[in-house]
Image (cartoon, rainbow, N blue to C red; front, side, top):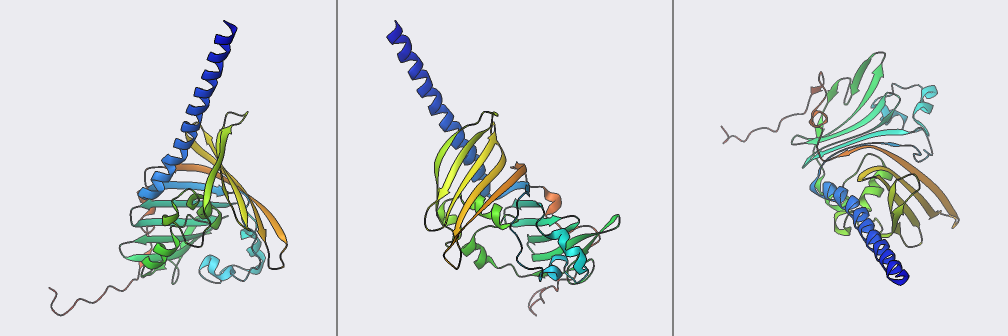
Length: 268
């Protein structure tokens, strides 16, 4: 009887592990499908953003030289709040902190790049000038070659890592699943890793079936051949299958100064 009981226990453990692995795999499959179908809303915070080497880009951070040197530190080494919305070819990305938000909106008119910033209790937009924006032609070839971006470089890398190789940049290394399991706090996880001279390990954390956090450790050789290590932590506040349509149009009160193409003489 003891042998039968032990065999039954072992079988149950094996079956449980099998269904656990299937559940963990299906978690990422769900998000992978959302990315491939290009219909989602993602809201997240990069708790450990990359260090900025210089502050020479302070002008582009606001669209105009409206920020004094003393205020540049507000945007350096701070957690970055990001939103990415996709509805087919219509797309919106924002990255910002402390009232300064870089925005990129892509729709049928082209691509708008502008900055939202706080002026007291009011939010203003700076594109070509205050509260005025212009759409540039969308570089579709770049999208085909580089794949989709997801706000910051870190999240772009983490989400592209779970996509098939033919849907991401050719410059990006291949990642493969290497582990999965459960933690004592009730979260489950899936581990991915890239191989090669520069290695990265990425862990995707789930609360049930919901992606709640992504963490990574990078090991990169610098120009001097010395290995540098960096960690990154992303807190995922939302990753839903419903595009938030309010982000896919220009904010109220903003003038679109895009010049319309002239009609041919034969057009009515």
